[in-house]
Length: 319
Image (cartoon, rainbow, N blue to C red; front, side):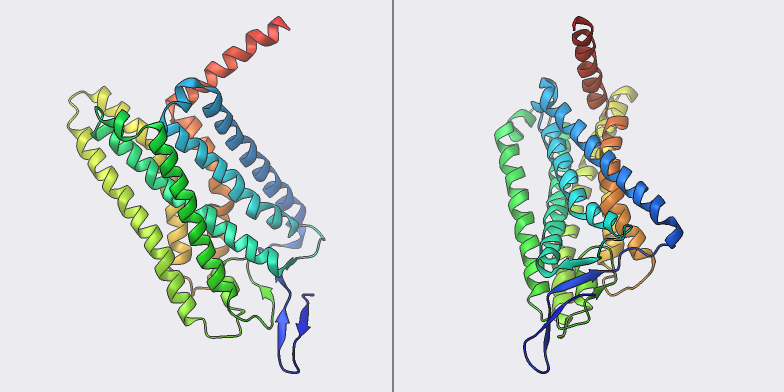
């Protein structure tokens, strides 16, 4: 049971929350534990492989597109670590309680890392726009120094966004009940437990997340509208195919990221049973899919992996 402290005869202050987790039949508990544990390990290993490949291959870490991909893999590893270990505990006999401070931290890091990803996808679209629509100016407009500054700006903006959401959510009083009908501490689920009017919070959350997501999404669409226009001007079919192939991976991960987010946060008042499944998809499955998408669809990454394995084989034979 969660704890509350008496501060007066009539008021109690919540000191921890109970995460009810995902609804599941008890006989599937061990299977679900193994499934989410394997997903978590594969997510960490897959993104670490991308990160090491970009770092170790001179042809990749000299190009802004793959610097951004390395940052995306780093974000996926941390986002998964902020969510999945706590989710796995739901399938064990361990207590479902999470301290008040732990709930604040999880909500902050979830929105910090998630919004940073949102900004990063926009930077990746801008990078592809410059590479395809402004190829002669690309080395000047998107160099390593500018790429570093843009990435740092995305991290700072994401941190500010996460701080705003966490501050607004936990500025409200929570005096019981303390059971969160969700598997993580996220804004819609936590606000249902507040002992005050949450109308302003819901409005600010809708506007803030809506503005961040919509502006990034519109910039991505604008970039790709210009990219498609430029690609259609290429005379050869092979040239068009190669140009589209450089954008295919990014378009796929953007779709996988944005569709579930729109479903969840534009329906913040909803209590649909689908919400949990959709949230699991973009918090647990998407970080696993990103390295798979980039290794299966991106020729440069596949070539870099082949070069790395080709280098390792002779070394093993020498030993």
